[in-house]
Image 1 (cartoon, helix red, strand yellow):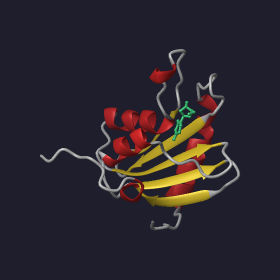
Image 2 (image 1 turned 180 degrees about the vertical axis):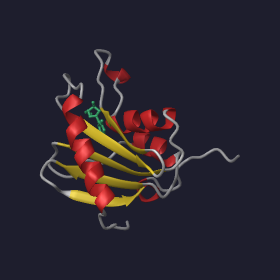
Image 3 (image 1 turned 90 degrees about the horizontal axis):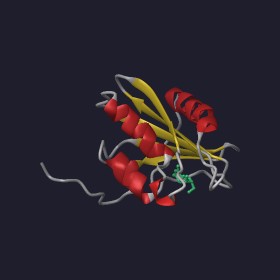
Image 4 (image 1 turned 90 degrees about the vertical axis):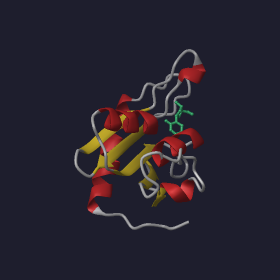
Length: 135
Ligand code: THU
């Protein structure tokens, strides 16, 4: 897996993910996650995980951030950052990988935690042979 270097947008993206994480609705797991997406034209969009009494209805922070961006007109998603209070950097679940992959196989994924452990790579490296309908 390629290890990419951080740039100044990445640092801003991580900061936005860290800030929005405070809005997480996660009373069942107690695991608060923040995510932030960067679109080339429209800039930043954020999301948190939102849990539910019917546990399976829970939606991850990454999907909320991506869906907010897309539904606001984002067409050029370039990056997503994810943060949680975890022992190591937090890595997106399989469902979120597929959702991110839909919008570009070279989207950069910046995985981090509150301690500052960090890994940055391409979504195609996190989801080899990801599914896409041929148009
Ligand atoms: N979660 C995320 O929001 N993103 C991830 O990448 C991993 C898991 C959430 C779902 C649930 O609310 C909590 O973390 C524990 O699984």
